[in-house]
Length: 114
Length: 111
Image 1 (cartoon, rainbow over the protein chains, first blue to last red):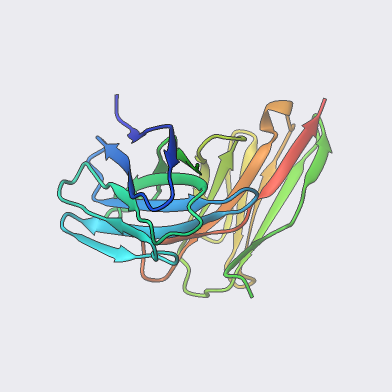
Image 2: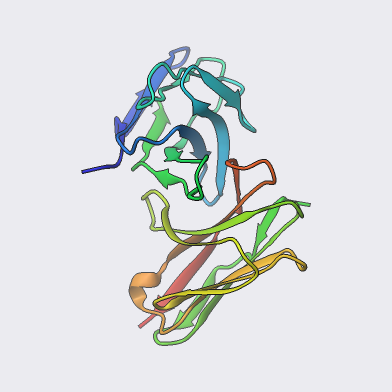
């Protein structure tokens, strides 16, 4: 059963703490993405990766970091430098070097600050 | 000017009516256009994508693209209460895979 999984569903962060959000896909997609969504807003791109061991900053990368050591996995770390991390975080994947560029989304992680 | 703009909403239509959702974009080199539906508290799910000028139909949904006017729309025929959701327009740039999303239009279909 192919798809994208994100964990945890809910995550609580204390002041000064780094937290890591997990994203795994078994769709054999090359490209993976992280978005942030604030209430009533669209999606804003944090980071994306088109191939293993390579990634690029999106529009709002400050306070976040990523790694792409495996094709299937693209974890996002929300660092203590991100002062307003409360949001809905969405991971997506796509197969960009084909005619099918559609991005498919995981179920999301909701991050809350204690 | 925002890169991708959607009609602000919220939009309310009676059951059985046609709902019309609109989106304009600023990058003339944009190649691919997507409509996603997002239920409250859930992640976006793809409804349709369109690459070429004209209409593309899939069941009750029709996407319309006019690249000269930099305009893409989604029509939902015979609207159902289950269509009540936020609809997100997304546009890929000339360089490929990055998508830029609009802020979404909230649609309510009243029984």
